Length: 483
Figure 1 (spheres, rainbow, N blue to C red):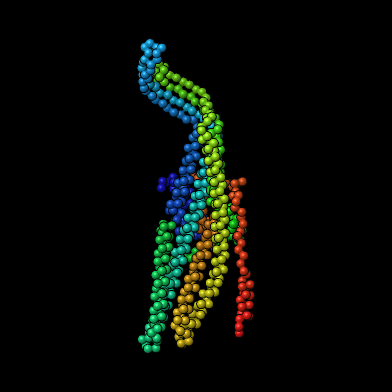
Figure 2: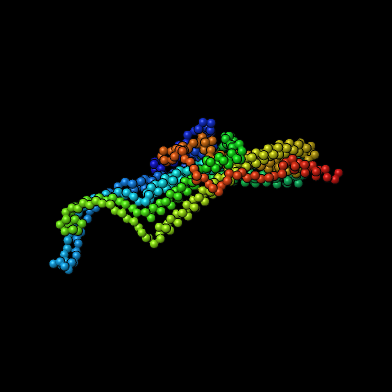
């Protein structure tokens, strides 16, 4: 990547500065996000697209300036004129000339082209910011998946150790003649199942480690710590999350700028119905200059007006084509809004749902732990069978695994909410400048009257039966049960 292209990427996403109150500079999750943003091909591709749009403005801007052309020619002219004696002849000629052409009026085609390209540049800028946020989210997802699978491997290892302990205990009893062979077979079967679970979790850890390497560009820590900064900065209500997502979405802003570029393109097409006026000055000299006998030099100046009166209906078709593309851009703007609304709503609802699930799963784990400990004591004195003990141990492993999954699902949902409201990079201490000089981005950008039209900020509400009513139904069943 060239230094000029890298300057764009660094200005937008890579040279990100730690912000006050956000993650520490040495935070592993922030480091992973920074590394991913710095090396992700999607980000650099957006940076190249942004640079290309800036250069396109420079190309169009040249149309306002005079065009200077140098000419040099040498040749021979042969002609036959019957009224001249002799009737045929040849003429050798050569010469050099310099011409200057200045555009005076083109029906505002160049003006509209400049506006279109400027909106296109702003579109590329917002797309770069959106890609930055999504790359940070993917890095967070990869980090959390590795941390999750590390925890699940630990739980599978503990489960294997416990089952192996029971197997050895039963084996010792069997050898001593106080145990049954069927108990040893049950214990061996459960050890094999625990070993299979451990192999499965280890394979899953390998898969998410490989994905982390692809997203971030380097291997993860052996034991990545559980991040704690994602819970801060969460919207207080679903309505607040919705409003923040719709107001801050880089994807919506990019779609609005794309619509503005399409609208300017329509006006650019309409300029074909207007005349074009140019001023031209040309001077040159030579031998028989311009094929005129004995002419040594020639200078001319004037105004040239060209006006296409008929082109087979092509200009009208181009206007209709661009109008349809403008309508398509409006549809894509509304779609981007609906997508942002759905993403924010689902992520915010997942956070609340997982909070409730974790409270229930925590009670479940504590209850099963107490039951397992009681079963173990009862098994030692012969009041419980080995199958009861093994079932309780497996149930505890399943409960702990469900709790770990829900815990990391909640962390990921919190990261998704922050990304939906465009605040994840800030929480990770990665701050992209909004008014980047290298990108020519405008700091006071406004959507104005181009806000999405078919995207109401409505929070979806799902009616569920209150828990108190469910408890009452359970009580009624109890009261009606035969005694």
